[in-house]
Image (cartoon, rainbow, N blue to C red; front, side, top):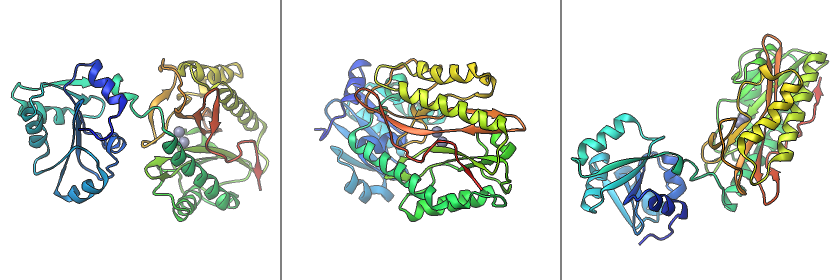
Amino acid sequence: MIKKMNPYCAKVLGDLSLDVLVFFDLKNIRYCTGFTGSDGVYALSQTKDWFLCDSRYREQARLQVAASELICYQSKFDSVVELLRSSGFSRVGFEADRVSISQLQEVTQRSSGQLTWVPVTDEIRSLRGVKTSSEIALLQRAADLNAEAFSQIVGLIKPGVSEEKIALELEFALRRLGGEDRAFDFIVASGSRGALPHGVASERPIESGELVTIDFGTRVAGYHSDETVTIGVGEVPNDLRQIFDVVLEAHDLAITHARPGVVLADLDAIARQYIEKAGYGDYFGHGLGHGVGLDIHEYPTVSGRCKDKLEQGMVITIEPGIYLPDRGGVRIEDTIVITTNGCRTLTSIPKKYRALN
Ligand code: ZN
Ligand code: ZN
């Protein structure tokens, strides 16, 4: 018997008439079972579930995973196929977004035509989209670490200090405060480098009269924080001050409109149209945001392509930006959780314009 059936997985099994759903993606496995190791497979049917791992993880799995059966394998794909065949299954769903072509070949070759591997895409993509209250609490703690770490290093942001120094001190601060690891390579982009939306910190020293964009985050129990601040250093030229105001307004507008039922593409459009009307549409090339959880980027995408609707419990970022080539850029990012009739911001570093000297 399954100790705790995930209703979402039960629905996918039923809707696609699958005998069993097999997970290879470690984040999905962690989500379903609590397993934090770096290799394993999870399979579940309507009545039973199995966790498979090699001997390195046997003890860890015994402690972390509450599956009806734990299987220790020598050869992963042999063991998975053997389990499915001996259980009499035929239709096997797998995460099409997460399984490589070679992995699929490995399992189909061993299946000898007895198992039909059914790619599952949209149906499983939103598995982790709506967060539980305990997941939201972890995301909140990760966001709180961002605020605390930033307050510890903000005094460093001044002329002559390199972008790398700021990134490194932020990382130290987050680790000292209990963050697990950096969520991604921190972006510290000053001056003209601010025009690079993904300008990973370089040796460049900050100069007076520039904007500095800092995008960073950490993890708590696997759950990420993600936040971007743009700060002025000294007297910043008017054109850059102006794009700051446009981005902040677009960011605030999107947050005001985020609530259950809103189509994600429409939320993107609210911020995008504001930036377009201000004349900077060509300089905002990326989507408005993304889901955050066990992965730094996960379902849902907040972009013109996503026709799904916001639901209570979804956690997404709102991160409009304007990037002027050779001039500089601004991005402002908060992570929000959708509530019953609106949203709450998890990240808390003040986003209003401030200039440091
Ligand atoms: Zn970010
Ligand atoms: Zn982000």
